[in-house]
Image (cartoon, rainbow, N blue to C red; front, side, top):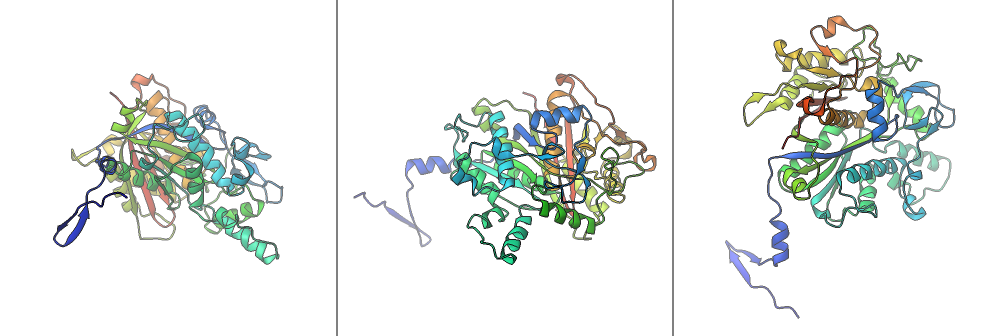
Length: 462
């Protein structure tokens, strides 16, 4: 029988000495000043990560005429995860899951696992068995993939079963609970003892995930976090009808039947956004952790900020968004405003949203400098992927900082000159060498209900 540790008493509080191993583990919680990006991954209507980057640089659009998996949904323009316009993407065809495990996986969880594994593999954190490499401490890792709607539509499917007198299976609720994709993915990765977290902040969900990851890493609580966003809404024909009705009620969707003109941010004839789906993540690490394992560093996450307007149910408050942008662009230690070389905008193609965002940007950056920022509207190509949209823009920005190539804003046929005068809107692909790539950039997201978020990234240099 092991000897009892000696009890010490201070101010009436009893304590015992920790074993050496516990002391070593707790001593790892050291704050850090630098959070770096060591990988990224995405799954969009274009395909996997590489296909998505190539399609963006080539000026392609992922929007298609969409009628739902069974053809029962009214034809609309949308950007589903797809192999082509008639066949939806099947994540389980790429995943080596046994039938027992797959029963507990929703479609969204399957998509998330594909993307997170891709990111970890690119970061060099994945072992040959598809789980975290044995050299990585799982207790020092996190998985923060957030979503606007999560799996809420699966509650409708459960209710439909009840109404029709069908049996609700034990696995059904786990395909509806919003936190379960992260839990299922964490199990498959072997993230035992780490942190798997979920939150929803509408279209600003991704920057909320980045901010939470940034705070966890800078505090010293975690060494690495896979953070980003996901949105999957089209795999079930009943869900497709409901999600279109949801956004139609908000008068935010385009009803244009032409995929080549339906989604056009900053255009004089814009009328609403095209709904898309997909997932995107960044692998974020403390600089010390990345360097210790010899990882390739792609960028530095210098700022991650969120705010809430608390003002209007649907319309963003321009002054509040401008303040959010200014905080995102401010180096608080130096007390200086960082002028972004590239701005990946929210820019959804709505009549009121685009002017509010551009007005906020003009309020955040002095007019004499704003023309020096290259402005991109990624949703012109990827469509609006709601909770995943900020992460998709972040993936695109990291690629730009790494390679020097800026993808274009497409579908801008009749620019709204009254709105964009004096601005540098990127409408054709721009290339430079990696050594001459833009040095920094920002991503901003604006969500229904006044949820706002922004991140600032810097090109990595030794």
